[in-house]
Image 1 (cartoon, protein in one colour):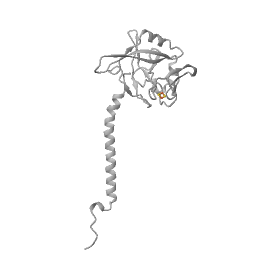
Image 2: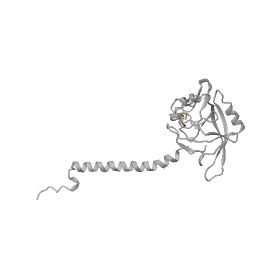
Image 3: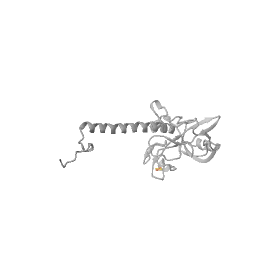
Image 4: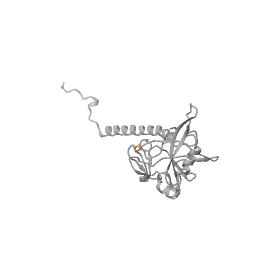
Length: 216
Ligand code: FES
């Protein structure tokens, strides 16, 4: 009797067919995982898209002072104080002090050229609300890099973020990183003679604008 044991099934050399079947199974698993991931991702991303006026943000009237501040935005941006209203599904409406930066758009064509990130073909707004309204644009005071509050530096004609040095021109266009997008416009409208705005916090660090929350 031979001293050699019979090779077990596991020890058999694999034929090219076995190897290619295994590879096919691995690829199929990756594909199925991808489909499952995408199926989960679509509703999540969908829920992050701006949903203005449909149960998302709450319109906050600019008080007389805030409206006056905005109207003073002639040549330089103005810092506007807002008593921001927000409503969580389970809590009563709340107010918190916030701010925004307002600019007056004297030349809409130039603004659209400077802020090509905000307009699609034919000058269509890429956000679900008018970006320029009543001749003004309101910017979130939150730096789109990592969320610090930026400031206006008149001597450099730039918005400047003290945290990591991002800079934006007077129309909010990015001129210096590390941020990867320009300033985020907020919804602004006139209702019964009163200017109103909404608060939206967009996700930091990414080029696209995905809503993170409607509260400050
Ligand atoms: S948070 Fe503004 S540059 Fe980083």
